[in-house]
Length: 365
Image (cartoon, rainbow, N blue to C red; front, side, top):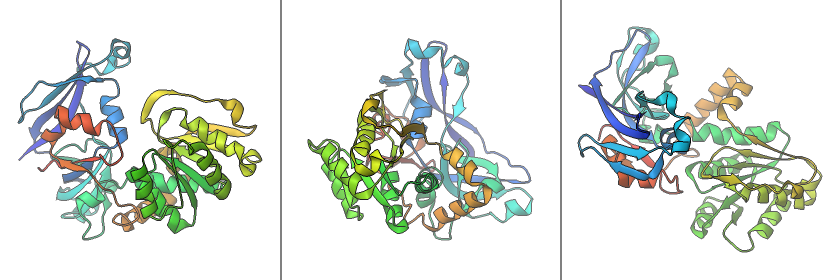
């Protein structure tokens, strides 16, 4: 059996090239296992790491359907930043799930034989992944790799947002790009936790989607009365902290200004965290409208997990496992093979990171 893995490199000519590398079937050491990967999501963070420096308008296929290769130009202004990657083929894929098909001789490895497990650690866009047995998250019997593929990024982020809100003394929160997989999880989790949530979306169909999940407050940023509706929702919920997946534009500034416009927000500290960069344009922040006590920062899941400690992090993982087909269930627009993921058509869709267009790679297809 041969392994097949998605990799990319930067060429001396200033191009980003994505391709599939073939290798022999891997071996594992005493404390490791070999996973046959059956599902690996393409998250916005994957897109950013793989394609961040490239001009995707220049992407073209330079291989064959069986041996695909994509080439895109890296703008001259970005070539210095990517110089260290020239000629180095790097594997990708943050998280995924599959079945353990071989193990080392240690007890901790052998007990996983035949189990469906989820893992995080990179290099998941491959037919087979060798990883330490201790780094595998065993899924409940009956949970499929597709259902368990997204255990490590979105669900812990959702839990972390609510716990960060509580640790910092806030009682309700705001979330943007709220109809995403993560946003839907957050809405369901907040209902269970009894937390007021103000969702911000940009399409009426996304308003309807979240209302169908039980959302009380959904504000459409494309509506002419958006700021007034947002201010009313903040006044009712007393939300003083926000998590923004957009990054660029003026939405973050509008949220902080709307918080300050409420009696509760103007007399308490308001906080906005960026956790995504769906809009790469500069952020527009008119801080004179934010009041006297406010903050902007970067939310990082890794920092949150370190802060709560190993025991709490393990409890968090087990909560995710127990609710991965309910509260933390993910949905995917399309399931593709490794070869199909390296087509210009597919790349033009999943790199937009648009709501309702999340792709899942199944390396076994």
